[in-house]
Structures are given as structure tokens and as C-alpha cells.
Image (cartoon, rainbow, N blue to C red; front, side, top):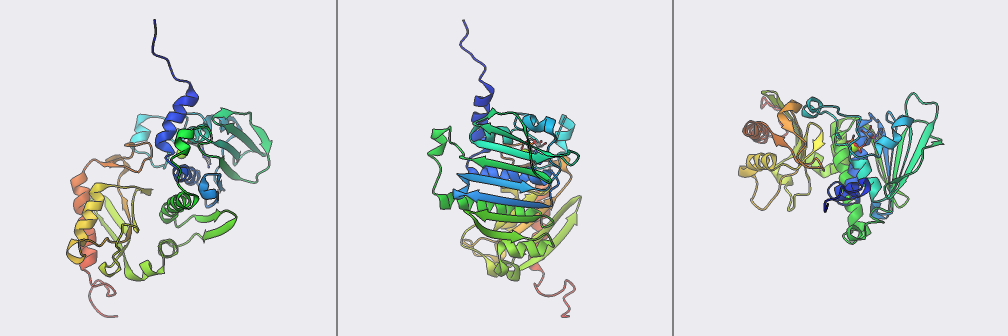
Length: 338
Ligand code: ADP
Ligand code: MG
């Protein structure tokens, strides 16, 4: 007698989708990460009905070879790592090889892609995870991934969708997080046929201003501190620009947006003396360190990290920010008025 059954592949992907595709915005994040990993310099996002009806990401990256199209939609298939060593020093945003398979299993997904060395593009479609055959298609370069009718075949998930406006808000936030992390890449965001954001590639400061607003930029200082193999750079607002909500707090570790208690605590502590306890600081801060000293494989959504030397990271961030906050803003570091 046997009671235990191996689940069908499609069902495994649908179960995994619970973690990877919490809502349309999580799918958008995965698609944007794939475009960046493909070396794109220009990425366009088109949303329909808050991303529920349509999520389309168009990039000008390396593209996917014809022979890899099916694999791109297959679970645990990735071009980004091949060994445990690779995982320990992973530099790409993706590496789990499960996002596209998960997304495709709970939506109608198509990929049109032209690999840099191919004579033309190919398109493959998957309906609720059921893959069709690849067919020739027209596309000059790069990749278009189109995700329609998310959760159409998983009614239990569909019930958790909020209003179009709320889901759009989450998509917009996912877009901002990615756009802030790569000022050198051009981005475009369109919703229900309206162009909402057009970000030209350029300097980090300009990107911060465009994404976080001119008020933030006017009230924020730039910092760039390095010590012991760690670097912290970005912009943080003066205490006068404090917020009543944590709505302008962006932390990146090696280019990846993360939520990390240890980092938040260090930042909070640096602001402690200058900020009222019910106010929240505003910042976009980038921590860079040797990738072998941080584990990004903590959760499928990859927004959690674990540091090998947490205390050293905490101390470094606290001191870097504390020093910057103590420096009279608007004056050069030597204290002389220009
Ligand atoms: P992962 O990013 O973890 O490798 P995904 O499921 O997100 O897993 O993607 C699977 C594979 O499909 C990637 O490893 C990559 O080779 C390819 N791929 C996905 N999106 C793109 C894209 N926009 N451009 C080029 N290749 C892509
Ligand atoms: Mg990916």
C-alpha cells in the first residue's frame, strides 16, 4: 500500500507561487530582476488593471536562446548559478530558477525573446503552466514577458487580491525600488494606457530626486563611507524631513532591496538623538560588501538577508550615518564656509 504521492510538477509550481507571487507586484519584481540580470539598459513596464489583468516587461537585454525558452519556464532551471560555490558568491538578483515557472503556473504567460546571436525572435506561451511550442516571432532585440490574468486558475489566491488601486500601488512601489537601485538604466511605467514615469539613465542623485521627490532631495545629504571592506552610500534626509510613516525607507545590500532588522536598527539608532521617537527617517542607502559575507538565500522572495558578521555591519552603518548626521549639513566637511 502507498499513501504518499509525488505531486505533479505544475502543482509544485503553484504551491511555490504562494511564496514567490504573493501579489501582482511580486511577479513584477521578479520580471524586473530578470531584465536587469540580462544586462538591459532600457526597461518598459506596462500594467493593466493594477497588474491583475496585465503585467508586461519589455527589455533590451541579452535575450533567451530558442533552445532555452522551455527551460526558462521550468522549475529549478537557471542560467545564473551552477554550483554551491556560485550560490555563495551570487552577484545576480535571481538564482533560484523558479520565478517564471511559478508565475506561469498561475497566469497566462508568454515570452518573446531574441537572443543576441539569433537571426530572429521566438515566442512561447504557457496557459496556467501548460507549455505550448515555441514559434517564430518578430522582435528586434531583448525580451518581452507578458503575464495576463494572474491567479485565473487559483480562485483561493484571487480572493486575496485587493482593489485595482491598491494592487497598482504595490506595483508602483516594486517599480520604484528597482528604479532606485539602477540609475544607469532607463525605465518607463505605464498603467491602463497612461504613461506615468519615464526615467532616463543618469546620475544617482537625479534618480533619487525623480523617484523620491524634489522635497526629499532638497532635505537630504549624500554620504559615502567605507571601512573594513564595507561601503555605505546613498542619501539620507536631515531630521527636519522626518516622516510620520516609514514610507521613504529604502535599503539595498549589494544592489538588492532588502528588509533587514539589523540594518533598520542601526539606522534608527544613528537618528535617535536627533529625531522624535514617533517620527521616521527618510533614506535610500546602499550597503556593499563581499557577497560571501552575506546569505541572500533566506526566503524565496529574496528580500531577507543574513550577515556572517552582523555586529560589524551594525556598527559600521551606525557610525557612518551618525558621523554624517553630526556633520553640519550644507557645510563642507572641513567646516569652512565656501
Ligand atoms: P532565475 O532568475 O532565478 O534564474 P527565473 O525563473 O526568473 O529564474 O528565470 C529563469 C531563466 O530565464 C533565467 O535564469 C534566465 O536565463 C532566463 N530569463 C528570464 N527572464 C529573462 C530576460 N528578461 N532576459 C533574458 N533571460 C531571461
Ligand atoms: Mg529571476
